Image: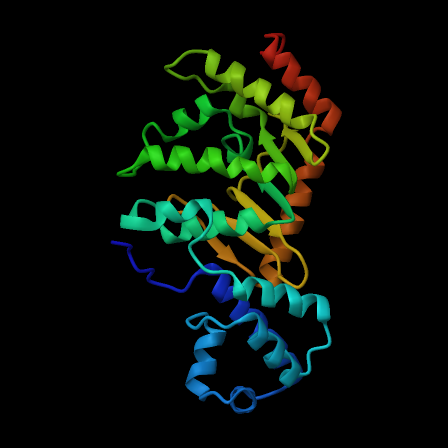
Length: 283
């Protein structure tokens, strides 16, 4: 039996949030929108909160009633509103509480992202982890189903085939020691070097000599999307992360990311140090 979500899907919530943003920008009360649609105010309230799915045509009619002059944005929201929930490759992991809703929401957002910026102060970012490194990272995970977490992390890397990625990797991560032996790190270094040659991928190394203030506030991911969706910032935690669309909070984390990037090695210098570690020339 499929387990019912405790909260609406992330797509429905984002559709509702965008409709609310347009309505509030137009200064139009929700009751007036509901009347224009022939709905009760309670029904429209559920649409804005993501509890009620609406069709492509209903989005078009609703935004016309609001007076939205953004054909591209309206069409994008209508497209997403029409998509059925629970159809991505990640949907099978939602059953039985195998993976938290917060984590699956992040995976779904990441899969739709246009650009992805990641900084982790301790480990190599998941989207550029080698299979062996992924397994090591989840070997002692507090989960009833670590194999699902491993499979999800590897499947997520498909997004690199289309999204622009900027990852900041701490040099300290290359000094990790694994019970499986040094082969794990050698494979991981090769993975990073290969990724760094992709046109849409930027890899920077935060050197050991960098001031400890850089990256000391924890791991972060910043996602941007097609118009009109607002950027999303995520702060990692063991339960899957905390996500925010608040413009001030996102802008703060974007500035934080840029500060860390400025303290990191250049792309060419980063690739050089990766090769040095792989060849055993950098200790």
